[in-house]
Structures are given as structure tokens and as C-alpha cells.
Image (cartoon, rainbow, N blue to C red; front, side):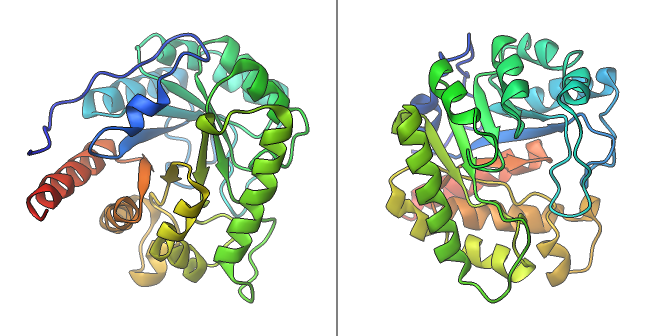
Length: 286
């Protein structure tokens, strides 16, 4: 059966009522559109820091076929980011997140602070995306368990170490995170794992994580990959973040082949097209 290019309906609703299994059961990986409402994002340099620009971008990504919008108000880029207070993060989110929720698309909150995640879930977000995998904020796991929402557990390190076996490190990190999740009462059916491309890794280690992504299927949990515009692409072909569309799509097609069920991307329409065409061709190879 040829995969349709029409955009499937998405399930959004009050926190805890997002149908993650339905999203993951589709023939193609779901696409999570990135919306940074920060002045210092590595990928867009604050292009969507103004609320009106952020909302316009969210509407554009919905029209382009995004299945989820992931909103972040603090730069978590792997190098050179400055931490901000809870108050500042909420100040950036308050004019944007409820308006994006009103578009009827599932919204994910990208934050490492439980206070920020709590506010976002109370205002309609239905997924928590923690770039420290429940291992930085002691209140995060309990909060997510109480709201019964899906959580994205991402691998991270304070710094890259080229001497380590990155796949063993990712697996050990996930094992610790899953132990935290289990003790807090988070259902395994609510957990998505993200190898954290570009975070605490050398460019070569990021590529290794993509090449060996299939190994992480041993956890029996869905995988998310966000390789969009990451620095490893420029090691292969020198480029600035806005010049990395081709490399991003190549990485995401490899991730999909390796088992990723959610792709996190800045360039939604191109990513949706690439994934669906690859899936359609793949159907004819069976």
C-alpha cells in the first residue's frame, strides 16, 4: 500500500489525553516541529523570540504537516548556552504556548525545569521533553507521573569525551533514567528515548549514535531523533546551521531506517516529504 501524502489527524487534548500509541503506529515516523522562543538558539538566532513571529511559525509548521510542536524557551544548545531563571523562561512561554495549544496540535514542552513543565502542562502541553532525562531536576519524574503524560528522556553529558564508547554510555544513562521513572511511577508506555544527537558528544559520536541507533531498540521503547542542523553535519560538509537541510534529511532518513518513530526537525515540510517518500518506496521493496 502506498503511503498517503495527506496529513493525518492528530490527537490533542487536556494533559494526559494525548494518544501516543496511535501516533507511533503510523507507517511513517511522526514529525515534531521545533519552535524556539529564545534569543540565542543555535539554529535560528532568535528568529522566533517575538510572540507574533513564534505563532506565525507554529501555524506554518502545522500547515506543513507537523504532528507535534516542541516549544522551548531556554537554549539548550550543547555549547555556549547561558542558563536562565524559571521566571524568565515562563515570561517567554506565556504569550506563546497557550496560543499554540489552541491550534489543536499536540504541544511538547522542552524544559529541564519541573516548575516550567508544570506550568506548561497546566496550560495544555501534553508531552514533557527533558534534555537531562529525569536526572537533573529531582521534581521532574514525580511531576510527570502525577500528570500521566508522555516524557522524552534524552541522553546528555556535561562534556564530550572522545575516549568513551558512546553507545555504552547512552545505554547506561537510559538505564538510570528508566530506574528513576519506574520509582516515580511513570508507565513505560509513556516513555520515549532520545539519544541526544549533538549533546555531550563529539561529531563522530553523534554519527555513531545514528549509525547504531538500532541497538537502542533493545529497551523496547519508541525512539526519537533530532539531528536537525546539528554541528556534526558541518564536519562532513562545512556549513552554517541554516545550510544543513540536506545533511539533516540524510541523518533523519537513516534514523528512520534505524527505528526512530519521531523525528524532531526545524524544516518540517521537507522532512515530512522525505520521510513519506522513503516510506512509500520502502513499501514497494517488500
